[in-house]
Length: 134
Image 1 (cartoon, rainbow, N blue to C red):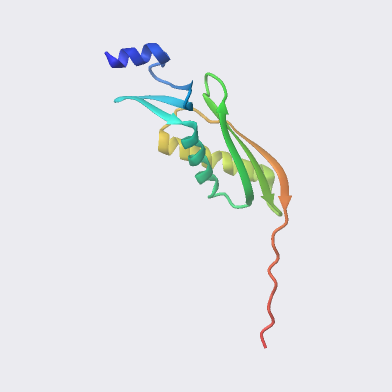
Image 2: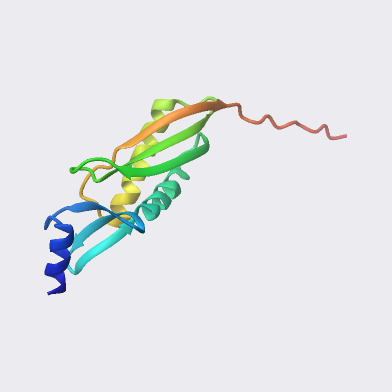
């Protein structure tokens, strides 16, 4: 009976995930064999932030998760500072791949999550000074 009540409130499709907004923030409802699972966008943001730690060439990053469309309930916007000597297209591709892999592994998402990458700056790498040994 509770399951039918939840379906009426959120009208969750039987095979898909759905984006929902509440007073507590935005979240994704994922239908599973054992019921509905609520995943806050803050959790998705933490998973994505952890995933981009595996990509070299990023000096600094700002990541946000936001509502997108019916087919893809959310998208990720990433603004980053690129380290000098790294390719923006290669970093963008690596970030997209890492984030989507992490989300599929941890949340078993059946859809692709668009990742919009914006390079705000290219930072020079710090030059280490060599000490002269006598």
